[in-house]
Length: 266
Image (tube, one colour):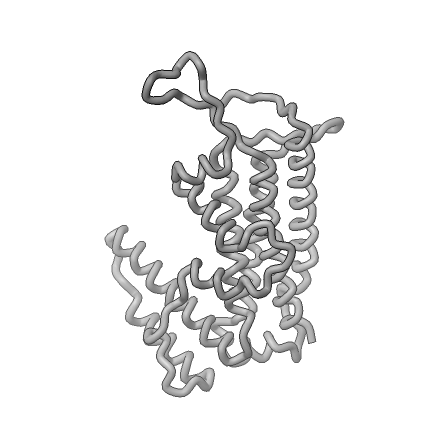
């Protein structure tokens, strides 16, 4: 990868904004660490007592950890620090995939935590069933024996022990991420992009879609390659766009973490 020095003052400012967002996410992750064990008498402790083997708090905390971890991984990937300087080196590929993963995890945590207690438990079991199906697909690909029937039966038993009556997890599905983000937009403040739009752009990058590169990167035609039908282009990332999408991922992480904090403390 050829490295070019950034000379646009606005892009330099946006790179500094990205650093601020990294610090914001890191502080939030640090603040969450003591809450891995929820307070006795908190709403999450009540949830967990109803489904101790499928604790709502454990799954939510794991998703929040994944969200913060993806942002931290992005910082490790693009930031170069020495005793004297801090610089940012970012190629056109990879960064947005980590942001997309952070948004996936934060949105899942918020979707799980947002409703009342019984609905939180139902959503936790739906996520458990989704994990069973995903794991079963992997086992089939590896030509391993399935354990899905036993695990589905256990989830049905857990639902009964949690006081959910004849509710059957297999009658419902976890919504798509598109559906989840649409539901969660009402919690969004200070929007640069709607959360769904930010996730769609990041997903486009994660899947190597040309439209995403055209929408967010800077493309400069290489004159020596120009023909009647087109030319080759030098593609570089735009820090302004990266900062905007990262802002939305961090804001979603913050909203989900705040909801977890509300439920985890007495």
